[in-house]
Image 1 (cartoon, rainbow, N blue to C red):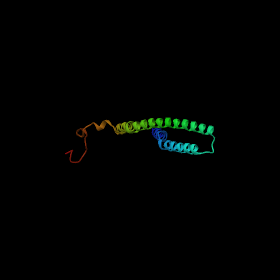
Image 2: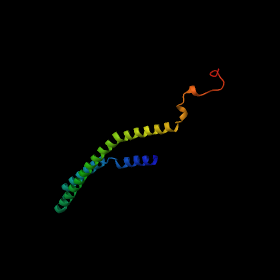
Image 3: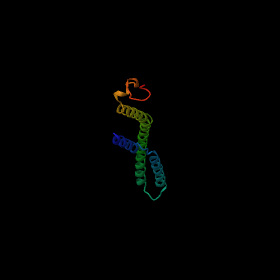
Image 4: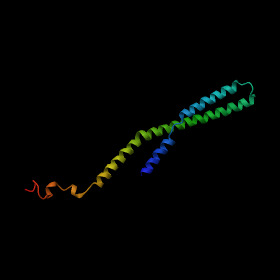
Length: 124
């Protein structure tokens, strides 16, 4: 159980890591490349059109990645804000219950009055 929980936490942190900043940096870099290409006089017009079309398609894919990243961030927030704490609380309750059942014995319900002690102040 410990291995499963540790593996789950590691995978959730790795898979849910936000790449929003990297995507925004890539979009900024693509805008810069587009400006450089459009301002350049050395590149033929056909190549400029091809580069512009490729950059637009890449930006669309990045926008799709941003929306998927936002969805992943939403699910990560939902998972860690709600279900992680609920599952930790339930695991804590189960642990306390197991520890209580391990220390459980039938003699713990028998009052001290029924127990006889030999010698001492109580026997006299």
